[in-house]
Image (cartoon, rainbow, N blue to C red; front, side):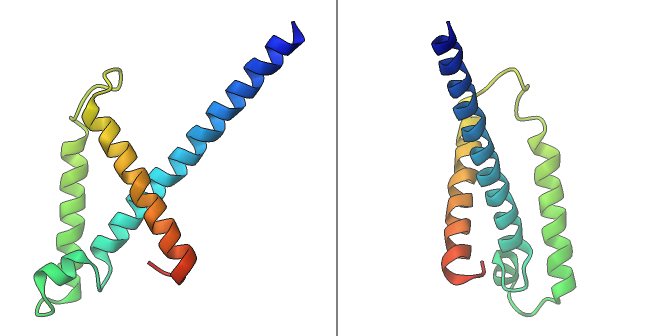
Length: 109
């Protein structure tokens, strides 16, 4: 009886540990992507060119992020897990791995 209980506890611990690692990678991916978008040398600043002021580029990027957050809340109900939600989660987790490796090797994003 105790070995079955121990196996259940080990499985529960491993699942919790994997979930925490996945959560940290997803949060790192989302945070790194937002940083890459709105930094002074980020994607939006390069897309708009250097002619716009940094304030206007930051304002536009914040509006874009706000718009994406507004529309992403209607992607699906929490009880329905679709293929799109899995791609989003694991895509941001992969981006989180990339950003953490880049932060580890270069010291900055």
